[in-house]
Amino acid sequence: MWLFFRRPAGESPLNRTRSLPGSRSKRVETKSAPGIPGALFYHIPLPGYNNIVARFLLRFAEMLFPRVAGLLCFAEEGERMKLPVYDKQGNSVEEMEFDLSLLGKFVNYKLLHAAVVMYEANLRQGTVKTKNIREVAGKSAKPFKQKGTGRARMGRVRRFGSRGGATAFGPRPRDYSLSMPRTARRLALKSALLGKFRDNEIIVLKDLDVAAPKTKEVAETLKNCKVASGCLVVVPEYSENILKSCRNLPKTDLSVLSDLNAYAVLRRKQVVFTKAALEALAEEVKK
Image (cartoon, rainbow, N blue to C red; front, side):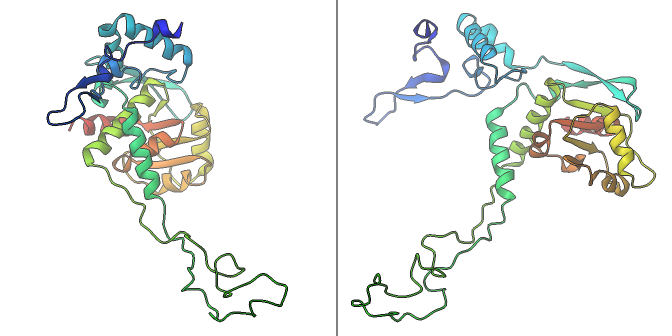
């Protein structure tokens, strides 16, 4: 059965071969760019990507209708999504539309992986340090004679493996930081938001203003809007009252729109936008 559905290597756009001029090897494999029909298996913005049945059906559709299946990984031009806007009591007071085509044509999973690796690597301090044999305090003389004591021979007390001795090939201070181009970081943020929109994990609040720092008030607002444990709250501008109200909530992050990044979006299950923040986002991605 598997041999029947297996595509020959020469027919897949991901396994195209070409000759290298001036090289002893006659053929070499090259991979095509994402977004073509052959890359459908790796770029699926639809829910249920990890479902084995969905992956099999998409692979089967790609084999039978490669041109039609290739269109599944693209967002339609001008595709708009209607989002309900909730008040603090959890009632839907209005609806607003968001153009998904502003966030790109597909979810770039490889770029998201690279962005998460970069952001987590930049969180590492890299200050751990162990002492080598030159840095350990102690004499270098032999503690006792070689033979006649009945003990195992020992050259010095600072040696590797001794209690209080040196560490062989231990960690040293280093810089773990990575970097990505600004364009790649922006594309990663768009892909992360597009995935959240397609999975219906975006919640829009009319406003989240509080007169004084009150954690209970913000917690009740999120509970009324059926926000599960673990969410990211995005506001258009910095507010000290909102910051103090959200910082004590478990698994709840607060971010200003200008500081939003792909790692912050992917770290929590749901993303809560205020209406003003979502409108500002639409204007920002148009630039």
